Image (spheres, rainbow, N blue to C red):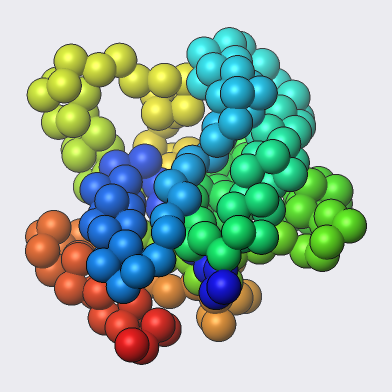
Length: 213
């Protein structure tokens, strides 16, 4: 069995969720069993915490503690069992988002985030981290325009994080860039400012290079 763990990252509106289903289909066509999940969330407990984080007022430290608590449950209850079964796990957001949103956006110091990551991701079976991260990079202003269009079209109401000011997302994007620079073997940048098809071609090129037939 050949298990894989791949995460999808980017600020809200970058389009990562648009492509995760296509990546799942690509792996399934190759015969893989795919486990599609998300953060915050992924388990009943983590989904409950997601609802609190996205709707209830709280300070930055409370927010990040809830994020990592949900991540720990997600890892133990879902991600590790799926990997042990040889599945390909595709996760919409993982720890890079905490470094971007709670670190870059909220200002939580990186050493504190590193400690929380160590607590959440280190298990008796080893360190749990994606082998590949697709980072959908998009200027914050362009992402905001996309979010507004999506909300208007679908009649959705923005959650507590989506309603942050533009500068918050600019800081989050910068934090993603720092993470990519520090982890070049894991994080692949995707130019998300292009058309859906052009973005998919970039994603496909990474998949073909990383996972040749």
